[in-house]
Image (cartoon, rainbow, N blue to C red):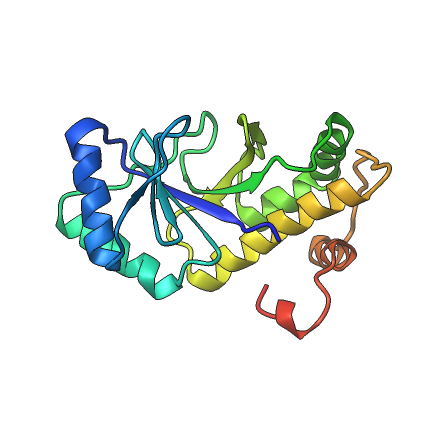
Length: 204
């Protein structure tokens, strides 16, 4: 099962990163584990601290634990930076997915899925642009605004998961943009087509 990833960029290295690692371990009451080369990251429970001082966590992490960690780190002088975006100054939350299973064809499917529903997605998310950033091992979606409540963050993470699953499952995807008379209804129909069906998605 793929777990949706989130990140907090503290942008610290050297001794300050070590302080961040030890503080995270103390707050979570878990001994940090050094992962060595090639990542040079530390693992603390469901949190990973990379060589640039970015704290990465996924949907396995408890929401109260995340809030406690952020608050305690703030008290210790660690402030997460706003994620940089060339075209959307309001973006802060980045959702990251593993690149596993994405062939060039499936990546093209994902791009077409987003292109076809770009207007609906921008309206729903309040985003100016919808870039998909590819790293060596992940796909990054820096689409989301700051100050999201836990339900919204979970809903957006589920959306990205469903998008990726659909892109990998479909044999062919059209990038054609269709005009709609009722954007909210069109968005709901599209979400249903992605698999947002059942009581578990009522909040989403």
